[in-house]
Image (tube, rainbow over all chains, first blue to last red; front, side, top):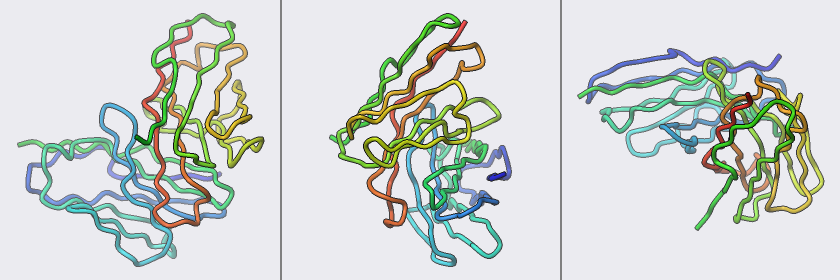
Amino acid sequence: EDKVVQSPLSLVVHEGDTVTLNCSYEVTNFRSLLWYKQEKKAPTFLFMLTSSGIEKKSGRLSSILDKKELFSILNITATQTGDSAVYLCAAKTSYDKVIFGPGTSLSVIP
Amino acid sequence: EAQVTQNPRYLITVTGKKLTVTCSQNMNHEYMSWYRQDPGLGLRQIYYSMNVEVTDKGDVPEGYKVSRKEKRNFPLILESPSPNQTSLYFCATHRGRVLVSNNEQFFGPGTRLTVL
């Protein structure tokens, strides 16, 4: 059975801290790994990763994929209160099925 | 403006009364998908469609139907809703196939459904 696991499930940090969110997957016919940010509404797209070892960056966020060890990490540096959200990881198969993990709830306190 | 719209946004209904949640996109995207989101279970894919007249089951298709007669619309049909279908539903779209780099997936605003 395809599954995506995220850790930790919940995290509280202070502004300015750096956080690392983890995502591991066991998916048949894996094609790509997706990261989303969800505040109190619909998820918004952050990154799509298809190749191992190539870091994707967007401002203070970065992500990398390891297809050999079947995991990805999302890093957020110099966290701000606006980074508080649920971060979702999803694996997409070559048949276009998408399997989401349970999410990591991040709270950034001033 | 690129948009994915869902209607209704909120719905309270009773067991067994057929309902349809509409999803429409103006980006000419081939791929459309429906998800439900439940506490502790995350987002789970119900059905997806890679193009007109092509639909496939996701992880939790039981109790749902979809159709894709036009590229822009992908309605979700609950023929006989039951209380365990109470959930937050999202429609999502993206262009082409997953092989395209940075193939961003856009989500609709969500439909909160309560089945009594």
